[in-house]
Length: 449
Image (cartoon, rainbow, N blue to C red; front, side):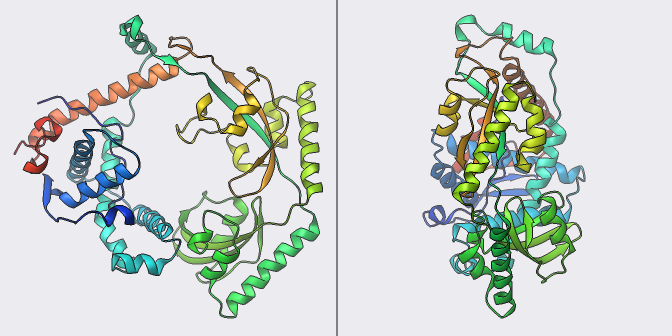
C-alpha cells in the first residue's frame, strides 16, 4: 500500500452544516463521493467543509484532498468501531448535538426562529439530522483512542531521534515564557450587592408576570457568553459550573427559577429547562454589582501588599496564589496562565497579549511584576501580579532545553507509524471506494474495492 500522510487536523469533529455564508455559496450535490464499509461520504459534505476551511484561512493546494482523507479515515474508524461493538451513550450524543445547536443559534445572534427559518427546519428536525453523524463521529474518536491514544516514548528514543537530525537542519526557536499569576478583584459593598439582588428579583417577577425570559436575558444579562442566546447555557453535567451555581441549579425542578445566587461572577437568576439524570439544561441572567473607583483602588492596595509579602520572603508566590488569589478558576490550575492557542502553559513572546508582553518584557526568570489592571473578557476590572516561572532566549533547538518539544515530535511520529500499521491491517479487509471526482486523493488507498 502507498504510504499514508496523516493530515494536521486529523479527526477533528468538523460541523456538517456550514456557516450561513458558506452554505449560501455552494449548490448541494447529494452524490456519494466515497464509501467505507457501510459508511458513505457525500460530495456536499466535502464541498461544505472545504468552504469552511477556506473561510477559516486555510489555504493550500492539497486542502480538498486533506478533507477527503480526514472524512474517509473517520468513516473507517466509525465502521471498525461498529465491528468491535464500541458503545456510545445516548447522553453523550445529545450533549454533542446540543453544543452544535447552541453554536448555530449564536450565528443568528441567539434568534432560534431565524435559524429555523434559514434552514427550513425546526430545532428538533435539525437535531435529528445530526444524530447518526454525531454518533459515528463519537465512535470514530473512541476507536482512534484505542488505536493511537496512549502512546509513550522513552528518553532513549527521544535522544536517538534528536541525534539523527543534521546539525544544519535544527530549528531556531523563539523566546518562550511560562507564567503564573495572582488575581485580585474589587470587593463590592453590601449596598451594591443588595441593589443587584433586588434587580434580579424584579426581573424574576416580570418573567412570572408573563414577560419573555429570553428577551430579558438579551437586554440585561452581563454574561457575554450566553446573553446573545437568551441566557441559554445548553446541556451540562456535574462539575462544569462553579459550586454555588451548580448546587442551586440541580435543586430546581424543570421550569422553576432560583432566588438570586451569588458566585464569583456576580448574581444569577437560574431557570432549569430540562434534566436527564446528571445532565441539566439551564439558562440564566447574570447581573454584577457596580464597582466604585474607591473599591478598585482598594484592590490595587491589597495587590501591592501581597507583592511586598512575596518580595520580603514572608510568603512564596505559590502559597500566595493558594491563599490570597481571588479567582477560583485560576486557583484551580495553581495560578498558571494558559495559552489557549496551544492548550499549554508555554507562550512565545509573540503569542502574549500586549498588556502581558509589556509587563514581563523586562522581567527575568523568578521575578514578579507590579500589580497591573486588566479588563477581563466579561468587562470586569481586576489586578494581576505576574510571576515568570521560566523564560528561554531565542536559540537553536537542543536536547537539554527543548526535550519536551522533541518528545512530542517523537510521540507524533510513533502515532503515525501505529496508524499506518493499523491501516495496512484494516484496509484490505474493508470495502473502500472513492469517486472519480476525488480519485487523486489519498495516494490511491481509498480505491481498493
